[in-house]
Image 1 (cartoon, rainbow, N blue to C red):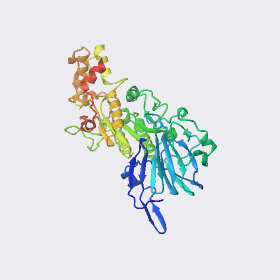
Image 2 (cartoon, one colour):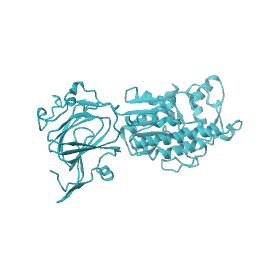
Image 3 (cartoon, rainbow, N blue to C red):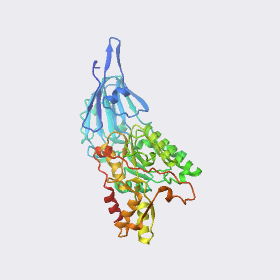
Image 4 (tube, one colour):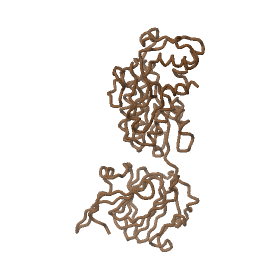
Length: 468
């Protein structure tokens, strides 16, 4: 019987993510009315904003109609429009709760949120029962399901009406026992730009477990118009965008400008749209070049962006696009050092070859090693602090490029006096092509990410380890 006068409440079950909800139902002598899904109220009550795209109704004539335990690769919001059911849910996801069972009766005053990979079955307790469910992916014959036998001894579901007495399909009766079920794997994390400095660091940290997927530019190019259809995006929980156009000087040329905007803005716009439409958490790596470097102290995440050159402008525009994604982390960093060609390796090579370099001494910042960025990405995805922008660099006293060059020379057993400091203007005075303006101050404040429990490594310790 429908219960009138309930308040909207959400209760956790013994299966992680399976949420039972009591719904307000308003009735009188004419019948009843309820809001079966009201996004604003239900999210406020603790239900996920799972983005339903399809509404299905299963009508059942007789008491005892029983439908099998199916685990689909999408989330479901289950209720009944008329009648009453006994529902059984079994966790068929990979992990420690595989095989866990929850049962409950559902009438028009109750509903349940069923996360992807949790098997769902029901038995009608009244005639003319209409079973209603919203899903957040379109039905597909190619979707990968898992099934469990309704009579499985391990699950031991206590059906109100014995299975021998109910209407049930032969197909549901033939489903495998729990020991033979193929568990539903977790949604995947996709790293884009996997062949770059940061991409390689992420691969080293995350490893090659099946839930991690890596794509270099040859596999996924953000600037490719076909990018939006390159994957079944509902299979992904997280995308880490480690790809970017970073040739700051070439970006000042006509061709470079077009390429920078295509990769850092147009491609990111597509990525942001995909993430928003599919409830994907998007992690995006930004740059100190979004600032003009004129601030007297450290730049905070809330400081207004004032990019000087094309590269900085495209990164600032990309950040603005990513910020529209409901679940996003923008990691703003500076002076990145990883595997491959970089400033530290260049200085170490010059020292070894006996070359005395001139190095800029009017730009100040901190080095950021890709291992630290990768660890910061992992931390944010694990702890899940408030979405938004987080600065992440090495810690320690800021230094100029020239001071860092001297440190490299000293650390590799060479005379630091061989390094001559020069102004940015003097350093580029003989350049034949356009030169991008650089921020003179690239020092980023790290208080926000530190408050989440993440401790970036001391810059000079990371440098010493890198040189070793």
